[in-house]
Length: 369
Image (tube, rainbow, N blue to C red; front, top):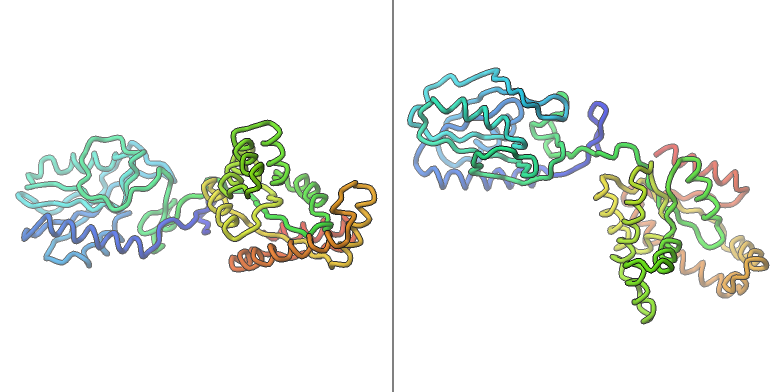
């Protein structure tokens, strides 16, 4: 993640992928042009990196020139195209290939065609590294397209946001959800995870999503996902991860304006953690941290046996069952600890002390994110 001015941008297209696409375009155009010496025309400012890398890969003689147009203000393409530097050479009878960094609305392309309509060129072809089909409003043919991308603002490889970002060797996409904090909260049975989740969601205005509660809601209300999950459970089979993810997606969608989420009870495996990452990425967000409450086993056993005297839960009254539950938790958490540690997102917090003391410890972690 990078910050340019007031906005955040996330990695989108790698330098390697860009390099491979430019190589493909160079070969494709060379084959089409044949033995002619084409004139490649770059549109400044954005295309300077594309043109530079392209002509170095072009396998035959060629000429290069530039024109300078202006159409962007901040992150929006305007209708007002200004021609700042025009053509300075005679292109009569020449094959001209426009090398664009990106084509979105096509407004700049309209001005390019106006520039060349009286130049008597043999042929005018359009090549672009990036193309936003959802945004394109013109009928001009695009002869060579590198990568089709969604209609979201990007920076890097010659493209800028208010002057910054052109020097980046890869492409970053704007992060539209600018201020979300998303946590995976873990804790062994008896660690007080539910109590702390209640405090944290109020303090930070987050939405607490308990997987168990979500399952019970969907099954009780006989939603399509609830009935699907129940069909697996009735057969004694595990509910597929995708069903769970779809339920979580529905919860996230219901709270689209939230400042963030606390995920409780999910993920439990690396595959689930990867699925959750993909879900949050689709929402233009991410998991910021896995926070695990750490409590000594003997304290947990004591807490749960004490709770079992009033909770009525069978699994809180049998010490052997309690110890098995704790062992199962550590087996699962150890895997996820490695997963999130690899991303520098794992935080262990001492879960022994008063509720207020533990809340302070958790808050200090969240405040640092």
